[in-house]
Length: 163
Figure 1 (tube, rainbow, N blue to C red):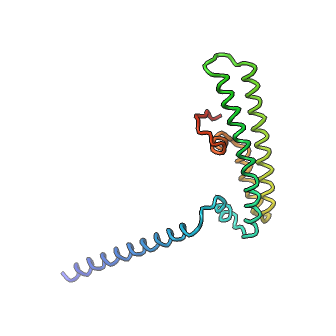
Figure 2 (cartoon, rainbow, N blue to C red):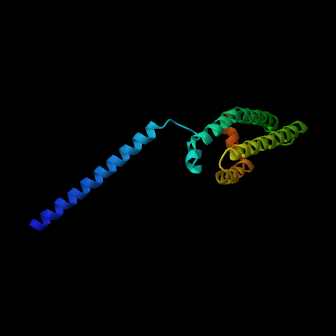
């Protein structure tokens, strides 16, 4: 009987220790997360191990680029809505609709160019090894599909067909 009681007390003590450890770890993590302000560039600091000086330069570049990016995405969204109204239920692609398609393609190419220029500038503000790795990842973003990004940056929440 003493052995069973000892095993039971030991199991309860072990369970209590695991619970206490989990509780204090979760509490510590929550305090750390809440103490840090929401920062959309914090991932960059963590991923690329950037100094405060690096982050200050990059943050300035980022804040200068965001309004231009949002403006470009809004232009694309506007032309897409114009195209949607031109195509409507029709069965033919009009010259005006084709012109809007060409305008969207031109705006997207300009957007990609702007993004690449921004990413190159940011990569140059980083230490060389981190800048190379950052630029390699950002090229994938800049040269990939933009439908979702355009929609989120323009504030347009309408249904979009992704290509």
